[in-house]
Length: 199
Length: 76
Image 1 (tube, one colour):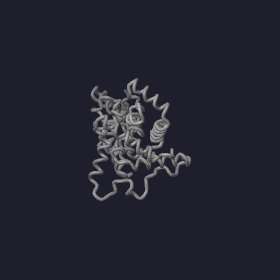
Image 2 (cartoon, chains in turn blue, purple):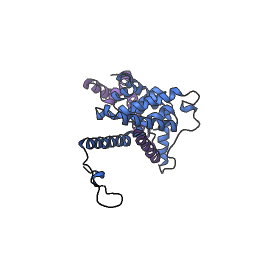
Image 3 (cartoon, chains in turn purple, green):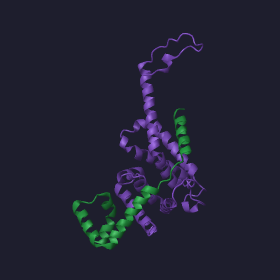
């Protein structure tokens, strides 16, 4: 393994400084640190948008949703050793994000907590070259999702937007699978009614 | 299977969770019921549209800033 200290030279450019070889312990520590860095990088790349998506649909505030993403991944980084089943990483971290967002909501006293109370809906990419039809479709579905009650909204975001299997939706929400299915069903029914003739 | 039963089992039908017999009955009902066929098509459209257009995304600069903060906080 490459060891920078072993190849170091004296600051005045004289003879190479003779360094002690890296111990086995140091090698293991460095490998573990690199492994954790690779894991958190990969998890962040794959799931940061999903965590933001879930958080934003609860807190309705971009800054707070970003705070949720940050605190979620700090927790994930610190608890990486607890992640035994890599295939459940997405639902595991989305559950952390979901709980963090709910905590923010509970702490609020006088800020709007419902999209209907907000003056303007957040749109992050108005400057992009997205075709008008696509943009209209996106705003239409997102506004319809916004109008759902929170328990239905998060369930359908997890299942249909983020693509989690129903059992993982249940796990994130800490409810039974049949209850999760019921929420997704009711959310789809309401969306279908609201979007009739539009999509 | 009638209209009420089909709508009650629509999610299971879409999730592929019905038994072979139930699925066969659902397919047979759908072939003869315009109302349920429309409900199914609209529900599929909702699911597809939500999957394709329903996500709020972080802009690249914010992603990078948040990731750096995660690393900085985790290494303290």
